[in-house]
Image 1 (cartoon, rainbow, N blue to C red):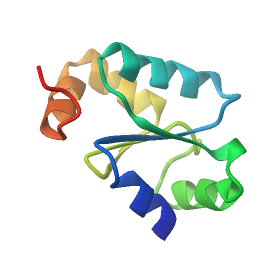
Image 2 (cartoon, one colour):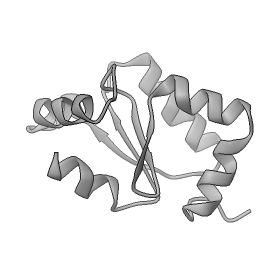
Image 3 (cartoon, rainbow, N blue to C red):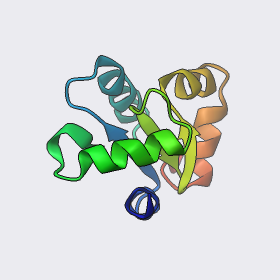
Length: 102
């Protein structure tokens, strides 16, 4: 869990993902289209990916990917991020975390 928390705090937006997950792909694309350049950790390509996946599940992320952190805080999975985007609060969170300038 310490590794996930450490990685999650190293950039304004961090996404834990799997390269084969379509929802992970959609969430990454959403952030890129917002002008955000997140740090992305592909769990299926990391030697400690399984360990990080279990840590994400212990944090309450179910399914474990995509798991989005903004400003070092766990925001949620695809449903939560899409809800925040649709109601307009995602952009404010991104600005507050320093991931967006405008």
